[in-house]
Amino acid sequence: MKRKWIVPTEEEERRIAEGIASDPDAAPDMSTATPDMVRHVGRPRLANPKEALNIRVDTDVLDHFRSTGPGWQTRINAALRKAAGL
Image 1: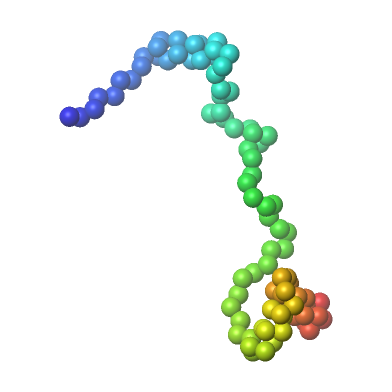
Image 2: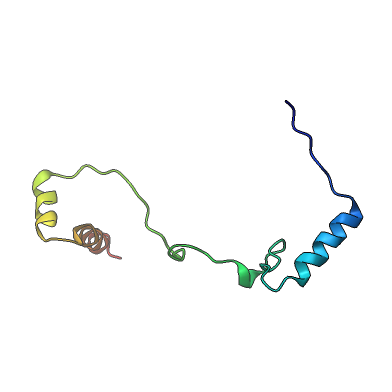
């Protein structure tokens, strides 16, 4: 059985819109979002984001940095920056 769509007339649309507008419990009209209505989820974008890469490192070097605990990747980055003179 094929469904038939019932399309309201302009007069019915007007009455529906008036009913919605007069309902105190109706949600606000969200059909046109303004910048203050938009909520960004997550962390803000960084001005200079880090780049993911694959690199092969000697096991003893990797073991040394991992043994220093959480933040070992940040410490590797700091060591590379120092070696690069940055």
